Image (cartoon, rainbow, N blue to C red; front, side, top):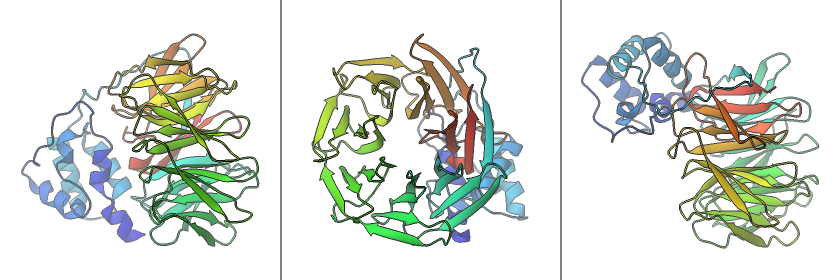
Length: 409
């Protein structure tokens, strides 16, 4: 894991604290730290990124660098952070709008062990443990929230898990976004069973959810496909979605176990017939819309993020009626993850800094929002959020390798 941690370095973090309103990238300023930055990050990333960063003081840059690359006691760390603080100090133009209100929440954080892994997509298992996917670290991890203990499980080479989920029986599943597989992990032994995709055109299993029978439903964004895995027989069935370039992304189930899918490449939501896998499209009114993720209210209506246009939306699948609301931080706020808890809508604004957690009450149409912490700084993007059985919320900050539990009222 050490080599992955070292090359998944500072410029990953920088890319995730970029101000949406910033200008085009520019060359790095001269200085002793420039050579250090180029030495540690050029293997993976474009070094023009710091010119777009929101910025930190030296302590903030040090904390951020420490989550992304292991410089140990090297003098490079001091040189690098002083250089970054001098040339990329804190800025006030991140574009985030904080909306005050009466609701009080608390964040509980865990920093996961392997640096540079880009921890993401935490989910609560039936036994109360919290699993996450370390995509760049090629691992899954589990937190025991009662003791704060953590364990990481290495995966087959090249798996690069995009998400992790559990079924009702407690089995742990992941999507092998890098090697075209779905995997099942045995936490007792660490053994992994892989299920390769049956169609070579499906290369990138993405998001996934298990229904009440344990059947896994998944999307493949770049392959423009959806699929299902029956773990009893091992059979995988796949289906190309009707419109080219739809880029199926988030996937959720309604109360009857019917999968619905978000289109990250077009103005649509998709319904998959669980028996036949026939796909129905629901077109959204604005052709400029794209949808990262969706969630269900108690009445089986759908809340979704209109990511490209900076809105949240509501669709009634029975009537096709759609309504949308602008997100507080504006049209470039890029809402990303979304969840519904007790019919209150929660989502994040990923295109502004800090990354904002937003609450929307459909009954009053009132917003409230909070900056999402990453230790003592704000640096990350929530790409998926999921409720816990107690009615709280699991999120993450992949830039700083943190899993967070949001204690909701």
